[in-house]
Amino acid sequence: MRVVVSSLGPTLEDRVDEHFGRARYLLVIDTETLEVRAVDNSANCQALQGAGFGAAEIVTNHGAAAVITGHLGPNAYRALQITGVPGHDGTGMSVRDAVAAFANGELAALAEGEARSKTE
Image (cartoon, rainbow, N blue to C red; front, side, top):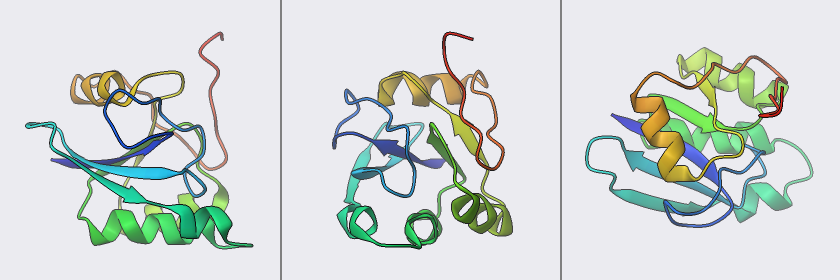
């Protein structure tokens, strides 16, 4: 299965970015092989509006079944909901750990505009 993870850098060792639409990188990851394709998301980072839609389009274009991030804004949430792609909370984790937790069913689902603090 393919997932897209918002990331602060281009590798599995980088941290999950709290932001989805304005994340520096969106990593397309095969959960079985851990093969990574880093997508530079700088065009959406610079966008005045519509960053969530642009990032959701990347998810759709890569055939991802889920998103791992820290927060989904209303535009991204709606766009992903239309395509049936759920968001999951990977706050405070490395990309590698978040993908492993996702594969084990340990990540909470995200709702629109929702972000969780790991200290709660």
